[in-house]
Image 1 (spheres, rainbow, N blue to C red):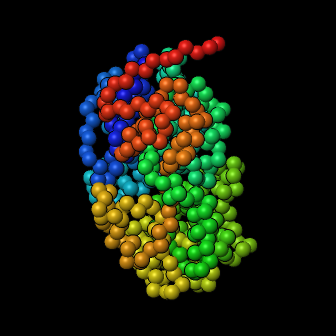
Image 2 (cartoon, rainbow, N blue to C red; image 1 turned 90 degrees about the vertical axis):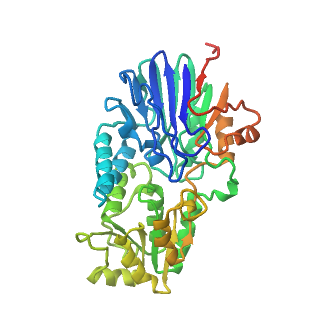
Image 3 (cartoon, rainbow, N blue to C red; image 1 turned 30 degrees about the vertical axis):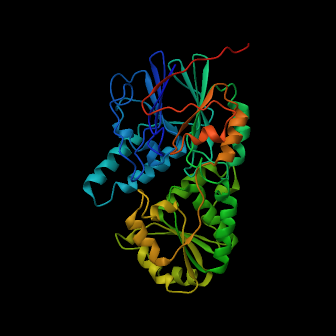
Length: 432
């Protein structure tokens, strides 16, 4: 077996992992680089972008652009696998972006939508065979909904690829029990390390973050939250925080469509995803799907405005003109508050990922920063490693500080690879 990290052994985002066994190839993620990242163009990759793909497959851990963004660069005949709900969310996002005014960007998004239609959806624990390689997805918690780790097995060797995950989300309690049951006899862990050098104290749980929002919503009547529309758990959390605070929840049709889809497919597993879209018994805490009229900005009109002015509301917003006029109108009130619930690096002009248009939109509102990372910290990484107990080693990816793994986890063999380096994977003798 051969293992190659084609990109991002020493940087966050843009990872491409290849595991090859006797001519069969499994690739995990094929990604756009993060905004501002140093460009590292890939050479043609046999089985992914060039050559015969009949013995290859691409597996996507989740729908963030730095993990799925380059699927159109893959050979059109290459089979691509992703989670069923994740695929639908990504298609909804890209379909919306395909209508933006920029003709070049719009054409790119339409191409992505067509490629998404060819994705083969999988479910957790479904074994997928690529020749003699077996891939098993394990559901994990991340800021992208329906995210997965993968167990990849061939030649009597078992590898766990973590993808992106965290231990402080709403569904994180299932992480270690899942690993104990299914991630057994693991030889190598290919592990993300986004927050390896950050203090764990900075990783507030999603439960506590929801409580913070609820407290603000009780204090302020009109609440606008700038948040990613694909951060599904955060949107559901805002809905519950508003309901507990006796505020209405208002969103546009795009966000409402995503919430309805996720709720319809997952509310049977937990009431967290159960939204009463037609609830009328409780005047405060109702859900409203705000319809857009043509290309006009969103507004509250007539009876709806009177209703929301009376009971107050929480409204997720995006940094576009669609939301600006309504946010401006209510921001004049002392009873209004605006929140920023995304990574703060986008607002830091000292960082390469600085987003000026986002900064110019949100900063005049003097927003309250309420956010937590979608990535795990060192403490939960240690718990994962101690649960799985990899027999041969840990390979860091998706991190700016891979060398920190050696300092944090001295009891394990940490293997530091370079981009495009081919690593010969050898099995160990197993009893029985």
